Length: 393
Image 1 (cartoon, rainbow, N blue to C red):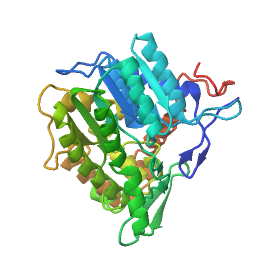
Image 2: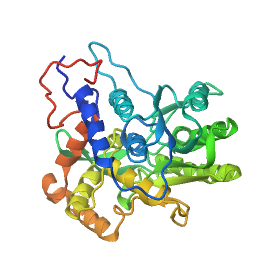
Image 3: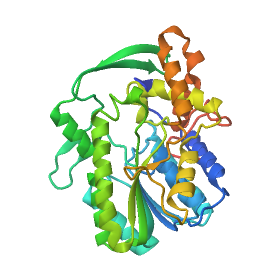
């Protein structure tokens, strides 16, 4: 079949197998052979490891640190007439590359929130991989079913307390519009915390600790975002922000819990990047497009693989104390939040109504990165040829 991108409301519904494999290959090539830090973890578990920061974490652990890895994700399989999710193809491309390098790689596809997947993972660690030195938690799910009660919770991206009106952009038509979002209800706030907060991360770490599959001194990190005041009403001060506050609270509890094995837990605040999740958050795609223009001009731009390499090499695995802010968070968003970067971004944001979108933003770069997340727009991939949606070859 001829596979082309199908976009509906900034959501791509298709993925290209060969393009996804090319994306994994390019990340592997970038990080392989990069200078090592003082220490590198030899066995790494990545919960939510099939796309974005999670995939970059697994690639960095394996092809920079030469670690054996276990990756967990929930993906949709392809059929003869329908493509799978990008992560389904990414997982297979990763596994094939790891096998070629002689690295152990076990991919578990299933509901990471469930007791069953936690137990399957523990069994794999006990019998195939060994005790893990690092656990990366990078789940980005819109829903979660509580494994004990069976109740399903849905997350929402909404402000709290009052409506929010802000600029948004349709990346296909490049049309800028004002969007108004009503405030979340108390139930929606609670549900978003249940899905995107730190409860499941803590359940994972409890299960791994009790099962005895964490190495002495094991490190765990979960990913978060803060961003500028432009995005605060929908992000840091909205429902997602409440969830991230819960994540930070749970990090402190996990840190204490792991002290018995000399372990530690951190929240890493990462840079704003094009992800499948960020594309559907109003305001954020437009902010990222403007931010990209500024950071690329200054030579500061990083994609997922560059961010995670710097996180691993300069923060988590140096052999020294991990540098954190006053709240105990790792700030790998330091380039984005530089005063000069934010000042220029804010100035461009103020001129949205009076300037051509291409003059004030890198919407072209944003759109290209979004397509590449789904395996499209990679040079060297023939998108006009008949492609088997069941294979990355």
